[in-house]
Length: 582
Ligand code: GLN
Image (cartoon, rainbow, N blue to C red; front, top):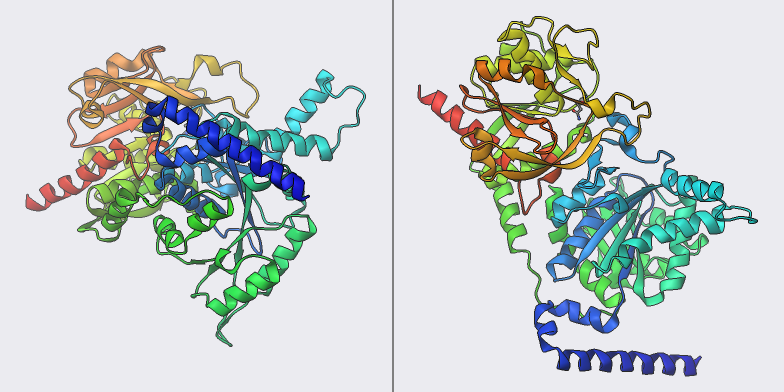
């Protein structure tokens, strides 16, 4: 054993000598790399961090993963985050928003879990198909391989075939060579039957990767108000369960309503075989954007780095993050914006939109107060009463007939009363329908999604969609170019002609009606240069009336608030101020 250890040290030393030699020969290589990457060059390995959850679901593994990633990024490292979801759907694209909230879409057209939205908003780095893998996708590729004969002669089993496939998907991101760290969040709670193959894959990877791998386990310390105590037993049990599966967590992050004393940390450490400085307190925060700072105070990043034998760089650059947080927590004014949708019972259905409003509010020094309004509750008769006090109206994306007439009534109100309006995807399509009905006089104008027999299909199925029968992954998905016309509101917003935005829809503005619309004042101000599809419409005689066929909310991040949201919020504030003066 000693001999093996000595040999390992010798190899490591030789490795480091080679690294030093390399930098002596090519010093500019050192200069072009940030110092932390130097250490990675020395070690030459991507580090894998797994984040599991215990005790209950909804403890915020996504936010903890994103916060740890943010801290590592702020220390100069490159990081990506991946989510493994144990359900059988191949992706969440076919799920009703009531199930798991919004479906987030990546540049490369993957329909993914909403946690990927958090990863992008925190890191300002785009994710991709490889960042979200479900059991369904794993099984599908194993079964496809079996049908092709790749396992010929072998019995295909959960172990090793499913677990190998999981492991490949984890290592795939590391193999790109783009990241110092790959953080993999395992969906669900330890003990769920369906997440067992994932935990087994973690066990195997931990064994194979050795010092390049680490497990962070997130648990809950419930507070008993009768005795005024934080209880550690559920955490102990959940770690025992992990141990039963052969996984020893290295770091425990404990959600708690109250401060965790040194004694409790020591007790957890003792019962769970974890160093006491690796028991991290995660107090309830007033906003998710505070969590990275709380984790920094608790030294989560430092503990992780030292456990992975990586030097902790002195500098941590969180200046912009702190500035954003300060602005968000200290707004100079409040602006009320109506969000019109039909899934509002579950606010997570519009997660990226509400987060984009947070970014846009902070950059305008205001708090955006979202008034959630159910589209089914709006009629031409009650809209004036309902919308009292709203300084802007956003009509949300959606599918199907339910709630459509309420959205159209909301848009009519915004158009006629010069209230800033922002329509996203279905919201834009409804704006086109409303204009066709009430301005152009096409009384039965509609989308063929809602009324396939309409005589005025101003929104129609994309040509490429007509032969499609499968629902999963078949929409117009991912980033497409959008060229913005000069002298339009859209150009004022983007300040450049060529832009890329993410899509998720089957229906589209019907170009046969373009001349009618433009003559009457609804302008197509953004066009896809390849297909000629209309991507943005706007009104020319309105303070701010913009509909977009794409989803700008997916691209809004803390570092880069989306200009459409920023501009819309600014318009809401300014138009309201002007109206007050009159
Ligand atoms: N249902 C519309 C379509 O498929 C809009 C989709 C959406 O709002 N994401 O085109």
